[in-house]
Structure formats: structure tokens, C-alpha cells
Image 1 (cartoon, rainbow, N blue to C red):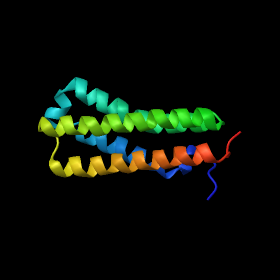
Image 2: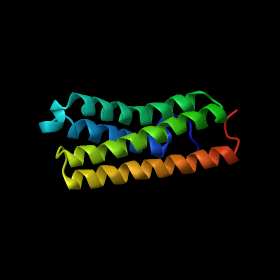
Image 3: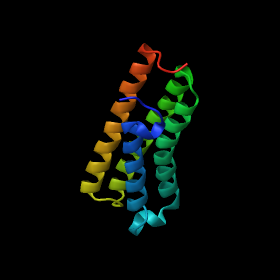
Length: 124
């Protein structure tokens, strides 16, 4: 499958799902009142998909790899904050499990994509 835009990338699509899920779980209950954690996890989640998009539009592998690395770091940040949210009783173990797995999946996709780009010259 040829990729014509960042919207074609599965990792971007999965990141979009993560963003929506993060916004949903942070809009209710105790989580909605913890402004610091709520805003930080929301920003980190949005950063994942935005850096995938920004890197794609740079049109060269070196920059793209750098931005995918930023996305990977933000996904790790989301994953870490999910532990905080669980420990504080803001989210259920079920929500933690599904969001943690999605973030791990995104990190794996990003790692594989970075490896691919390092070994292939697809953008000039």
C-alpha cells in the first residue's frame, strides 16, 4: 500500500484513537479535577499524532525519524501517566489495561517504522 499522507498510516490512526480515549477518560470524575495530570496526559497523547504528521510533512527521512522519536517519547509519557492515574484511582484497571496496550502497540509500530526508515530511502 502506498502512503500518500500521514492519515494513511496505521500508527497515526491508532494514535488518534488513543487521543480520543484519553480525552474521554479525563473528562469525568476525579481525573477531570486534576488539572495538571489531565492536561499533561492530553498534551502528550496529542503530541504523538501531531509529531507523526509533522515529520511526514518534512519530506526527508532524517527529520521524519526525529519526529517519530518524539512521538515514541510522548507515547511513553502517556503510558507512564496511566500508572499514575490508576494509582490515584482515576481510571479502572480495565481502562488502564486497554489504554496501556494501545500505547505499547503504538510504541512498537513507531519503533518498527523508525527501523524501516533508517534502512530504506523512501522520502527525499
